[in-house]
Length: 397
Ligand code: ADP
Image (cartoon, rainbow, N blue to C red; front, side, top):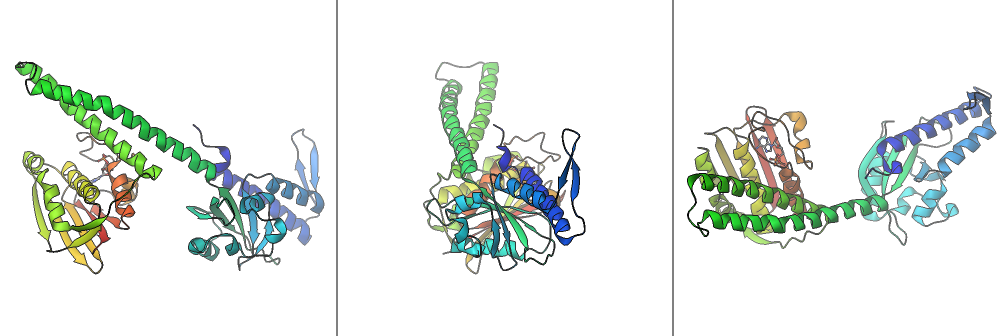
């Protein structure tokens, strides 16, 4: 489904540019540097914009926007508001103009507004960060700001306010659909796993060598298919906000050691060694299953993206109020410009090993989400062809 036009960043930029052009025209006419502006219209005729007609055009334009539009002073006082903003804020225009923009957002969102007002450059500030407007419907809105050229009428910045309700509704419907679809896909795929597993275990009689090879190949492909379905399901559940963490005190050394057991055969096959440097008694407030999956994912990547014979190091320590786990490898590494990208959904970065290893590009996305749901953070330090270290910081207890 294509995104509704009014929500695209390009459309907001286009509107703001048109607003700025209209403002420039008005300003020039007001200052007397020109008396009027003559513009060719569609029918090859000419249209003359005087102060009155240009002002009118400008007002019609901003009143017909589906976004709210505000002009504010340096102190954040609203000098102009269109009707759309008045509808979003559920306040009459008389109660909007002359008040501070801060009065319309909740206290917890004020730092975002302050940050926008402090902005020095005249470039567009198109933040994905949103605030909630006070009012009965508590609308979630995205603020895009542009600083205005210095003028003598106090106008300092224009703000375009986009209602996120519809966008969230579409996103939630999409996440719910993905979540349901992957649930439905998982059931038959699990059935295939059970029956092919029974074939391999000889429940239907002894298999010939060829039959065994074929059944084993089918089993391995089905395992990969299930892993991808599970990753998609988990990602959709996180995005949909249907993820409940049951946090409790956990001994991190024990948790990591238990997680490691499952990796021994794979690491042996790839002749990779793992060394552990664990401080004793590092306790963290975590959901054990999820954090074990986070650690598993990072170890699996460390192994996947390192050549045979590589060395993986896991460290655990306590630093002030945090339990810190780091997983390092001496593998292919990641270029600086890709550091942020690898945490995005469905992102796989080409490297010398990516043709030979499978993956969905979802692992690090949900790793980061899970760590953040715990109130923690994940960092990467990596150099191409030298290796990578992923470090997670979790709340210690
Ligand atoms: P996947 O491994 O399924 O592709 P991930 O989200 O786990 O997805 O990782 C995203 C990308 O980040 C990978 O495709 C890979 O290019 C890169 N990457 C992840 N971990 C490492 C690592 N330890 N060393 C080098 N590259 C890595």
